Each structure stands twice: as C-alpha cells, then as structure tokens.
Length: 595
Image 1 (cartoon, rainbow, N blue to C red):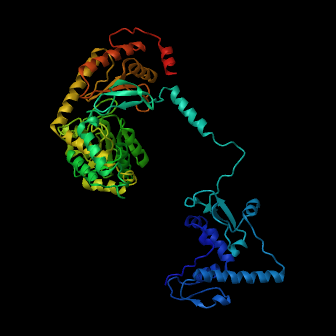
Image 2: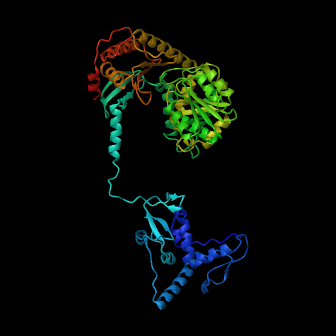
Image 3: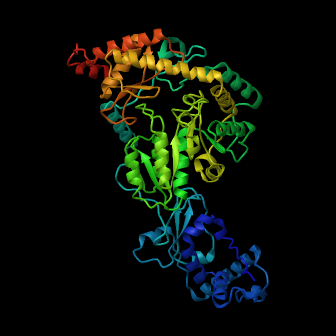
C-alpha cells in the first residue's frame, strides 16, 4: 500500500517552494531530532514501500500501537507534546539545558553547520517545532515572493539575498540618462510628432502644439502614412466600428482560450484564409507578435531546425529567430544564389525555415518570389513570407505579391497585417490547417494575450470586403498611378530617389541630422509631414526620407511636395543631381536646429 502521509503542523507553515528549497536540511534535522519523523524515516528505510505492513509510530505510550491509517494533525501534535514533556523532565533531572541556535548565531560562527538552513519568507512566523529548535539549523529569512525562492542546483542550498555593502546602489536614472544622451548625440533620438487625424480629411491631419488644446493646431498634409489606401477613414469601416461597439462593447473579455473567442474572430480568420487561398488563418494582436511568435515557436519545436533569413528582414522576424536560438544563416537581401549556396550546406532531411519579405518596407524592393520559393523547396525547406507591405495593395483581391505572381499555392506560411492597407490594427498568419493549429496550441504570443476587440475585428472584415471588391481594385489602381507620378517628378527635380518597383519611394540622405532637419523644415515651413528614417530602422549612413503616396493625394499636392522638398534640400546644403550646391558649410545650422 502507499506510505501514509505525515503532515507536520510546523513545517506545514511553509510553502511548497520553501520546502523544496530546503528539503535536504529539513530531512537531516527531522531525522535527527523529531521522534515522529525519525521513526517514520527509519521504517521507510527498512521496509519495502510496496508492502502492506503497518507503519509503527514512536515508542511513546500514546502511539505504541501500529497504524493502518495516516496520523491526524492532532495526533502528531500530541506526540510532540508528550516528547517535549519527556525531554524537559530529563533536562530538569540532569541540569542540562538545550543549546538553541538561531539565524544570527548560525551566520556568525565559522564552524560548518551540518544541518544547513531552512529558507522562509519575512512574512512567515518562526517555526515553533520544539525539535527543530533544539538543533543548530538556521532560519534564513528571504524578502521575496513566496513562490520565487531560488535554489542553487549545484549545491542544493538556498540562494541568500545579497548582503548590503558599503557601496552606493546602482544609479539607474543616471544610466538611462546617459543612454538617451548618446542617442541624441548621434542624431538617432526620436521625437514624435503630435498628429491628430480628422475623419473625412485624409490625407490631411492636424498638428497639435499643446496636448490638451485642440484650438492650438494647424492643418498638415501627411506623406508617410502606412494607411496606404486611406481605409482607416472609409465610411464602411467607421460604421462597422460603431455598430460593433454598440452591439458588443469595447473589449474582448480575455484571451482566446478564456472567453476571448467570438464569432467575429472566427469570421475574420475564415476571410483571411479565403483571401490567401489557404486552409486556415490565425489572428494576432499585431504582425510583430505574429512574426515573432510563429518563427520562434516553429524553430524551437522542429527538431534540429535551421533558419535562413534575408538580411533585410524586419525586426519582428529577427527577434523570433534570435529568441529561438537555433542555427541561423543570413543570406544577402533578395539574393537567390546566396540562399541556395547556404541551403546546400545543410542536410536535406534537416528541418529548415526560409524567412523573407516580399515588399521591403525601407528600400521598396520586391523579391523574385517564385524563384525564392522554388529554391527553398528544392532543398526541403518550408517558407515563411512576410507580406505586410503588400497585402491590400497587390493582386486582384489585394492578397499581395503572392496573388499578383500567381504563386499562393507555393507559399507555406504567409504573415500579414491589418494595420496598414487594411486601415486597422493587428496581424495574422495563413497556411495549412495543421500548421495554424500547431501555432494556436503552442505559440505563447497567441495563447497568453488578450484577444482583439470586436471593433477591430469588424473594421478588418469590412476592409477585406472592400479589398476584394471593384472599389478595392480602383483604390489600388489610383494609388499606383499617384506613385508613378510622384516618383517621376521627384527624379526630374534632381532628388536622389532610390528606384524601386513598389509603392514605397525612398529618398537617400545619408546623414541622420540632415534627414531630421529636412523633415523639420518641411513641417515648419510648408505644413508637410514626412518622417525621417534613421538608425536602427536603417543602417547608419543610409538615412532616408520614406514617402508613401495614397489614392487621395492630388496632383496639386504632389507638385507642392516636390517644390517644398527641392527648396529645403538646397537650404540644408544638399546637392540636387545636375544642380550646383548653392549653400555650403551648413553644419552650424544643422547643429543649431538640432540642439
């Protein structure tokens, strides 16, 4: 039969974690000092634990008979009281007094403590066990959460809190201040523009000078929004949001597993799967979370997995890959030959993930998608394709480059966003039903976060409906038309446009301070908002302006932008192609404005 459980009324004050932390020392002290504990331990050591024999207690009168059941708490207390009375009687006859050791004496002595110590929290009362008190075991108080007692696994001793020394504590604010100052000195410190969108005015918005004063503002034109089609202000999306909050309220109520899955979640996932011609889809709170969670979860789970990652991949993908700690191989941006060269070095039977983007967010390049997929599959890899800057903008239904190039069937895992061309917030993956179920079941970034609210789900559903309609196709056509017009006029003006086949128009600056100064001049003088792109978004020396035209920018707005940008370009001392630099040695102006 099973061994009866002996619940000590004194040790039961401790939490499970405290007992685990001090288990060897509790055993040593208990066996040597406690009559009930020692008799129990001796019986175990000399008996077969599978025998049905009785377990006898100590030899005291109150418990000399055999037991066929566990001792009760009162019975254990009675044994302790009897034994304590017996010891006191012996001490009184022999004039011997027990030596009681406490934490202070135990720590001060240089003699080794054979009994060790029991770790207890500061909230726990002293252990009143008379037998433990008669041993030199120490009670070490730890001022920490009861459930987070750490144990040195090598020595099986509790880790004591660091002793307070004479040195001054670490200056946290000084450290933070120095790190921020370093970013200011290298011109990578970011100052957020306070922009307030006004419904029905896109791409116009309001720049607020004072946080709580809507009247102290002015109208500006935005040229850097990722709301590429302006759907964030579409009447159908606004109505969907209003209807959803009226019917369902503002929040989801929990994680997907705990009251946070609604019919809207399932409808949205069904529509996303349909959009990408996949079996299943999974919605996340952002595409950063989707990329990070999916790549990390896959790489950690697949046995001996390797990841091959494009050098231009987004930070979210890099984070998931780095956290997985699996072997990674970086291939040059969109370089298929280099990818194949790396793939040849990995055994074909080894699980491999090839991760890359279709439209690069900062240089506007578009990969040779089909060739990339074919090479990856030829060497036994699965593919993870980020279509964040392509969904809504390419393909007949707005499913991205995969749809445009008719290769959706070759794409294993697609990640996309609801926060750019679809005008809302959130991210997703689409792929096979088994893959999606695997991430749903194992991905921490999906499991342990509150699900998206009904307002977001409803607006996203409306956005996908528009994207798959003739209206969506017309919006994409108009956007591409404006992109071509703007790019052509910028090039004609002599500005160093980085030529790309996508809707993203980067203009190379190459200096963080100058890039910031250009943007400040544009908004201060011309009420035009473009955000400079500096390190760590791009490498130092490749700082740029990143411009995104939408269907709602007009030819007049395009002309105003080109004219304004040409003027401020020359004003900060930069040279236009084919035009002599009119202002030289403008560094003092840069530093003065930056300061």
